Length: 179
Image 1 (spheres, rainbow, N blue to C red):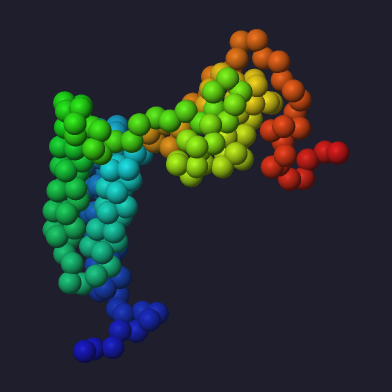
Image 2: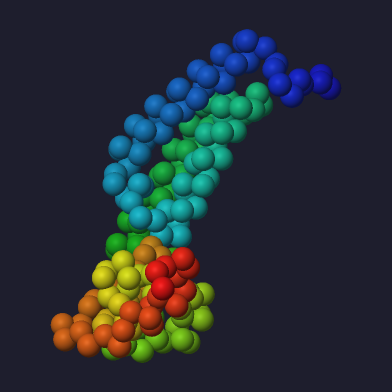
């Protein structure tokens, strides 16, 4: 087996990697454009898997001599087709949707943390506090609910009749503040 220099192989190899990267980049941009907005939206589980896998295929195809650009593009096209099939089945079949897509979960309701739900979803109080602070709510009682959505984002609904206990409640996990 021929030794490969860690720092530099050849100008031909650099040109090959550079050209491969340009072709792969262009192809992925075109495929993402064709496959639609969902490919680059906030990701659920299967969107994330596709994104990571595509990154691996692009890097392998650009850098490894034994993986051709055509191999990488074929893999990327198949993954995008699988994502399209999966999302189509999610839309059309409740049974399939239930199998692959998580449900939104209440983490807070009427000012009370739902600790069992938080534990099951592995969400800390600090993460709920941060979601409330981002919406300008300064106490647990200032929110009707917080929901962990299927894409791991938080939805927050403020109470109309906010009667906050005080800012200390949601600031206990914040470092370096005044006072």
